[in-house]
Image (cartoon, rainbow, N blue to C red; front, side, top):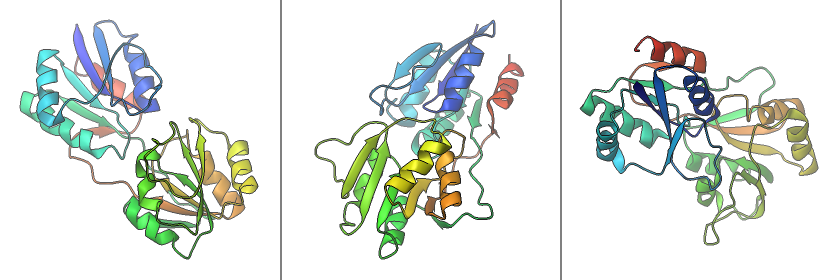
Length: 246
């Protein structure tokens, strides 16, 4: 029995786990960070919570006798990706990164590309009045000082009671989203600007299409750097990588 650890939290990770469970001779464990209160539970074994840095992950890989490691975390979850790279190297476990392609700007898009959330907040000053903020609840504080802007803040879980939150309204929802509803949100709330991380994938892409159709600006946060190593951009390619090592 070959034991596979998937660092998850994305739809791709869940899809991969489901497919791996159907392959005889493979045992899959999916690890979730535990930041979402009611996460979608993938097939196979599940663990929730942090490892305690690269050293803690290396220890886990040894104790659990992990044979293969697949990092299928969110493109912006860089700390765990670097920890995974260090841990896998330390204990000599083959590691793969499953990274979905970023969205590409096309004709009609009105993007302002920035390197991080703090720069995104700066880009809104004197340029936006009603903003659809879709960067997650952990990034709200970066926008809390923008008191002259109204924000519609979409996230899976509501912010904590003591969180710094910009003025506006919280919308708790989980993707995948559909184009009709995204278009309706922008129109009914008179949104002039979207703030989004370039997460890629289909689950949240409809907001990008709706913005293009309606001429709404997007402040797009580019992806951070990732550690070096083997990588694929879809679940089927990750399966091929696995099967070639069985």
